[in-house]
Length: 53
Image (tube, rainbow, N blue to C red; front, side, top):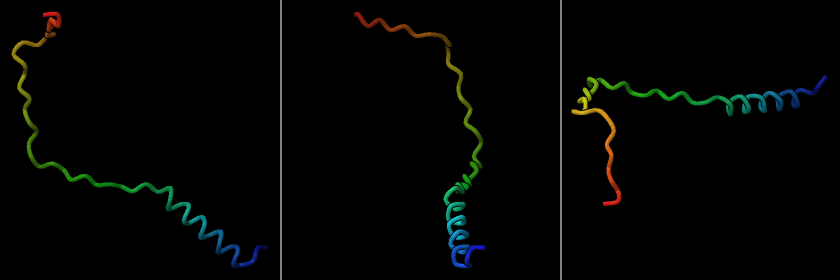
């Protein structure tokens, strides 16, 4: 049987170890604004830019 002070040291060490592992939960505020409507491009496709001119 372990002496009481050793048991208390083990409990403290376990508690601090558990607290280190716990990751903080961050609550992000919700955005109440409506989502922006993205304007579709006029001509979807690939733009080729000549670099030698």
